Image 1 (tube, one colour):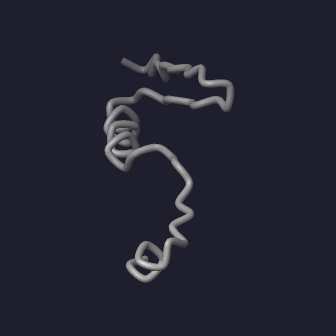
Image 2: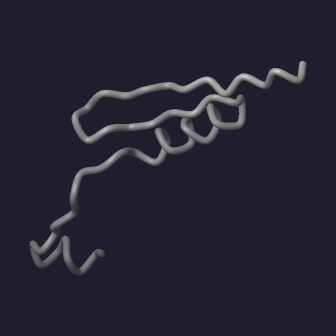
Length: 52
């Protein structure tokens, strides 16, 4: 990585920050499912357990 930056060959693609992935995992641990779409919209699905 360092050599690519020094030589000017730094071709990193922009993506989601790792902190966002951590947030998604935290929401999943609470029973929420977060789906990301390519069009920029997001959808949160609730998985309701009827056994309560």
